[in-house]
Image (tube, rainbow over all chains, first blue to last red):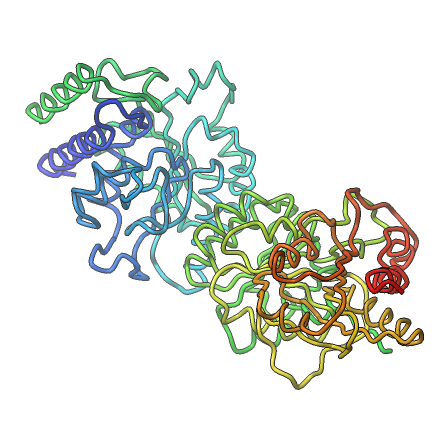
Length: 277
Length: 311
C-alpha cells in the first residue's frame, strides 16, 4: 500500500472518529471506547477491501460486514454515512425516536446486514451467510467483527467449530483486542488465556495486526483472504477509546458521556490529529 | 382410524419441495433420525448442514442463510428448538423477519418416555409471544405436508410444532390450506371445541361421546396458533351455547387464553379450557397414559363440554 493510500485511509479513520463524536454529542451516553478502537479497521474494510454498492445496498455480489459487537454500531454508521448510505442529518438523530439509526445494528438501516447486539451471535450469522454464498458460487466474502470481552459468549465457540467444520475460507473474523470491556480490564473481569491459541486449536488460521495501522490491517486481510480450506481470524491489537487521550485505555467511555468541556477537548484532539495526517 | 406419522410427512415434504426449490436448505442438531430431516440429507446432501449438538449455532446460522436468500428449515426437539435458542430466535430471526422455518419436533408430551427435560409444554406459548413469528400446530400428517408447502411462500419466520406419534388423519388431501385459517372438522350445534395439534384427535373422539348423550359438538382445528383471527373465532362461536378449547400445552398463555383474550367483552358464553396445569411433564410407557395423567383425554374434553352446557 502506497503512502498516499495510507494517508487517505488514516484521514478517513479520523473522520469516522469525528462522526462518532458528533453522534454521541454532549450529555448523552454513547459507545466511544469500542467504536474508536475500530476506526482504522472500518476505514480499511469499507474504503479499501470490501466491494460494496451504496446505490444498491442489497447487490448480491457485495461483501458483507457483520458487527457481532453490535454496541459499536456508531463506527459502522460513521462509515456508512461517509459512503452515502444515508444523510449526515441522521448522525445527530441516532437513537432518537424518529431517527433512522438504532441503538444497535438493525436491518432497517441501509448497509446493515443483520441484527446484532445480543453478544455472541454475529459469527453464526456469518457462518450462515458464508454457507449460502458458497452454495450460490458467489465470490462475495463475509467479515465479522467480535469484541474481546465478547469471547466469553459460548455461542462464538459453537460458531468457531462450525466455520472450521464447513471449511469456510470465504469468512474472515476479527477480534477487537482492546483489552477492556464494559466494567473493567478483560483480564480482570474474565480471564481467557491463550486466546489466539484457542482459535488455532479450533481450526482457524490466526493472524495478529496493529489495529491502528491501516497498512498492517490491509495486509492482514489480504493474507486472510489467501487462506484456503479454513476460516481466518485477525486479532486487532487496539487501544480502547483511541484518539481522545482522556478516554483511552479506560472502561469509563465504554458507554460514557461527554460533558461540554470533555466534548470540546475530544473535538480539539481529533482536529489536531487531522492536521497531523 | 388409520394413523400416520407427522414427522415422516415433514421429512418427505422437505424432500419433495426441495426437488423444485434449490433455495431450501436444512439444518439439524444430531436428531435428524427423529425429526426425519435425515430424508433430506439423503436426497440433497450438499444442502443439508449437520450443526452438531449446538442449537444456538444452528438457529443463528439458519438466520444467516435466510438473510443471504435461502429458505432454511432447522429442526430438533421442540424443547431445544425454542428453549435452547430463544434469544437467537428473537434477535437473529424474529426482529429481522428472516425467512427461517423452525421445526419443533417431538412436541408437547409426545416424547412420552424421555420425560420432563424432553417434553415441551411451553414451546408454542413462548413462540406466540415473539413479534413477527407465525406459529403452526398441525393435527395430522396431511396437514403437516400442506404446511411445509405453505411455509415456502410465507414471508417471515415460522415455527411448526410436530408430534412424535402417529395420529389419525382428519385433513382432506385435496383441499387448499392457508396459514392463519381455521378448519372445521366436524359440524355441531351446541358447543364449539377449538382444538389444536393432537387435541383435534381427542376432541373428535369427545364429540362422538357427546353425541351419545344428545349433545352436538362442533370441532374446529386451530392449526395456526398465530396469527389467530378474531373473525374466524366469532364465525364458529355464532349460535353456540358454550366454548371449549383443547391444547396440549401449559394453560398459561395457551390457546384458551389466546381465544379468550380476543373475544372477551363480545361473547358471553360458558368457557372451559382443556390444557396442562402449571407443571412439567413426566416419563410414561405410552403417550395415552400421559394424556390421561394431564387431563387431556376425550373424556376430559367431553366432561368439560357437558359442564359448560350445564348437562
